Image 1 (tube, rainbow, N blue to C red):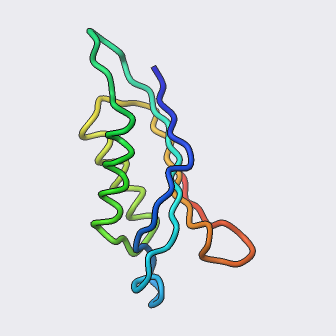
Image 2: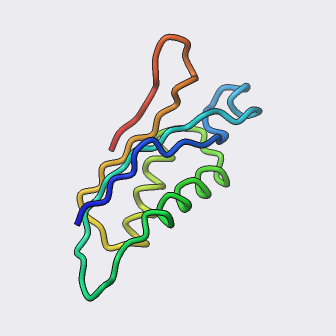
Length: 103
């Protein structure tokens, strides 16, 4: 089975610049992963979404690199998944582009 969550959007403190530490900014997360569906065991995508949002809001990361490493480790620890693709974007940080980091 494959789960895809696209455009999970919320506000969080993330960044190293002074203004990024003071005011929450829009963050967009896209991810997909595969898992083996056995004996009616399934991964609740609503739970995955909530876990990502809660973690990012509580940890207030300085770097996208730290956030993406932490979120991917958390997902691998909590769920039996494989082939994780994860992208975290900050669409409003620069006027003329969207900044993102992918794993």
